Length: 116
Length: 114
Image (cartoon, rainbow over all chains, first blue to last red; front, side, top):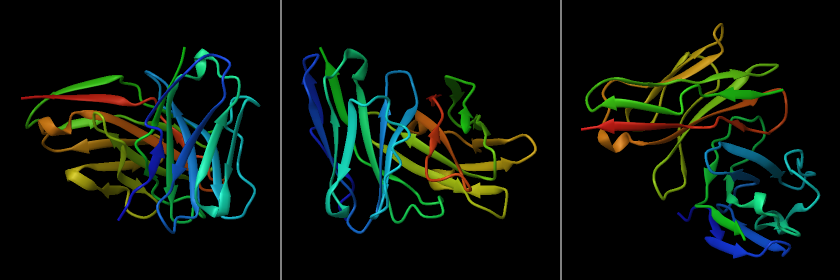
């Protein structure tokens, strides 16, 4: 079956511009996660969605970052007024339920964001 | 607060030799523990996880990991390394009583030489 897909695969933008990154989770997965992977660093948790519950936004680094998930499926991560330190690979993952915490997460290929 | 430490940035091993990639964690409660692998130009793939029960967990591609509660460790092992095992390995932890946030380590790059 189809895995997690993300678009675009690469995005180059100028400092100060807004960007939108898209994630299509595996069909039927109710949990969706966003992470950021900076060069030489591990994955940094950003935000988590589970069904219709309020998302866990505790990992968002600033109020320039926001995310939404429409219809319990596709998610968009928006970064406003991008800064050079936002340059990273943004990874999306989904899992069956997320409830209980033992779910295996399935990752997309990522979007490489470069802010000039 | 949850945290994961992978003390080695890089591990080098000869093909056919056993390999160990180290991971220690800190959570306030009981953990779920995971290992993921990232091959060059590919996304992260799940290897194995510890939920409960037997402390020795077997996963994909011949890998296994042992949960050691007293040492708060979850080291990844394989009896005989392959060149194709060369990749970036991430340990991750989730506090089963603390929500759904998963904390990943910084990663360990494994090089297996022929």
